[in-house]
Length: 189
Image (cartoon, rainbow, N blue to C red; front, side, top):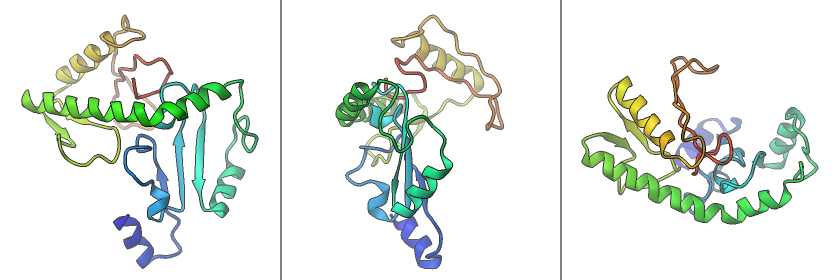
């Protein structure tokens, strides 16, 4: 909120847009409560609670939501839930606060264990969370690959897959994903 207030104080004409993926249900307030003009997120992340197979949302000031709606192209825009997935979308939204709470506990446990093993984490255990992410500084490529492969090997889906680094559009360096999730692209499992 302080950053948005600082920006708006200097440039009230600036539209503040927040990509809130990974941030929903983590804090007691959301970005629109502290001055964001437009917020977007993905239903396969926090608000989908590991159930929603697709979808996204935009919220905020009506003028900006309307402008975003005119630029977005997706089945069901302005028509509600689609693809026969209404039950899963609502089930995910219903379960999301609990599942996000469990993800935060998992991130805290990961940070604590990795700190005890001598690795740097961000945020550290005990510091306030603004999202479900726990970044690990694994020091080298080999450690990173070993960690990703261990995550994949112990995941509920695709445990037989061996993650390999590669190039991906939008990234300047090689990336590697461990994603043994029930919903492709989900990050809560």
